[in-house]
Amino acid sequence: MEKLLKGNEFVDFIKDGDRLLVGGFGMSGTPLTLIDGIATSSLKNLTVVSNNLGESGKGLGILLKEKKLKKAIGSYFTTNRDAVQAWVDGELEIELIPQGTLAEAVRCGGAGIGGFYTKTAVGTKLAEGKEEKVIDGERFILEKAIKGDISLIKAHKADHLGNLVYDHTGRNFNPVMATAGKIVIAEVDEIVENGDLLPSEIVTPHVYVDFIVKSNYVKKAGVFVESV
Image (spheres, rainbow, N blue to C red):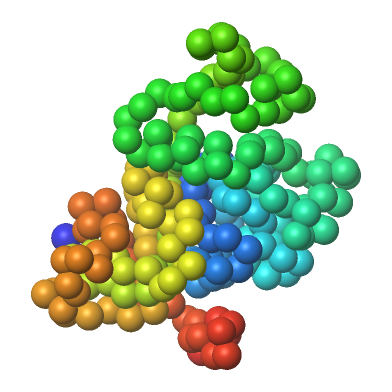
């Protein structure tokens, strides 16, 4: 099967109401081209699982601005004041999850594990309604695994099989997100021939990746800017 998609062909694999697992930390490792494609589509009522919602009018903030999102699940939404205002106005549901818990919940989703017990958030509002258990005299809460319909991730390089190499801190949430989606779409800066990537530098093997899309952005002075 040909994995390389052109333009916004990838949008055809996403449905209204889907849960999207989106890599990135701040604006680092964020699949900007994929986000742009969704922003100009007719998709709506999407749930996004991501560490944050980008910035105002940038990254995932574009989907918020274009009214594509119904719910956001993640850790750090205050970098985008539009997200906070949308929540206050009742236009966006927000589910907060501690950062480490988010990473582990997605990892469990990809590993086929139903959930895990953690001490993080015990006794706080984030623990309300969750199962609690005492283990060796300490209180733990059960956090369920997180899975998604679509994973949208960003990598530096891919070969035509879909093996992925990441760019420094752009690695962040992307590898775990790539394991927990039914369909995984990777935006990449560069596509190389099969065999050009060293096995030791491949982080996400091709078996996890369904499709690849060439990025419309280039990195200049440490910031990705649109090239087309």
